[in-house]
Image (cartoon, rainbow, N blue to C red; front, side, top):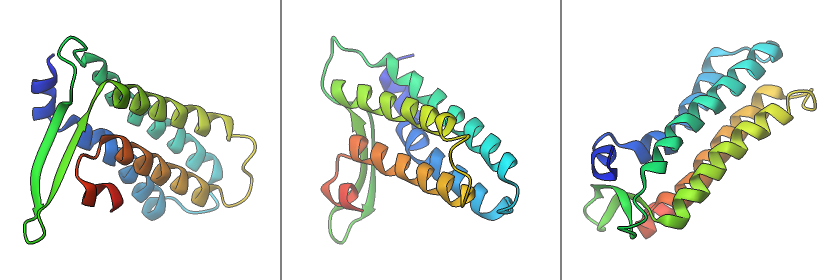
Length: 144
C-alpha cells in the first residue's frame, strides 16, 4: 500500500495516540492492586502500538521527502495546524521508539514492584511524546 493511501487512514495519528488510549484504559479500568493484569495489559498494548508502525515500512525511499502527511487546520486564529509526516530518518526513529516501548515493558516486568500502574501509564505517555516529536511538522504542535 502506498504512503498516500496509508495517510488516508491517519496512520501517524493512530501510531501517535494509541499509547495514550492504553494509558487512559489503565487509569480508568484497572485497580492498582491488580499488578499482574496491569503488566499483561501493558505488554499487549505495547505490542498493539508497535504493529501499526510496521506499516511505515511502506515509506518510498525513491521519492524521499516527507510522506504519510496528515494536515488539518487546528487553531486558525494563530495559524496552528495539526500536521504530521515522516521523512526517511523519522520512519526509523518511530519504528525504534515503538519497538523499544515493547522491550521496555517486557524488561520491566519483574523489576517494577511498586506503583506498577503509574509506571506503565507514564511509560505509555512517554512513548506518545517521543513519537510526537518525530512526526510533528508544525512548531506549535511540536511544543504542545
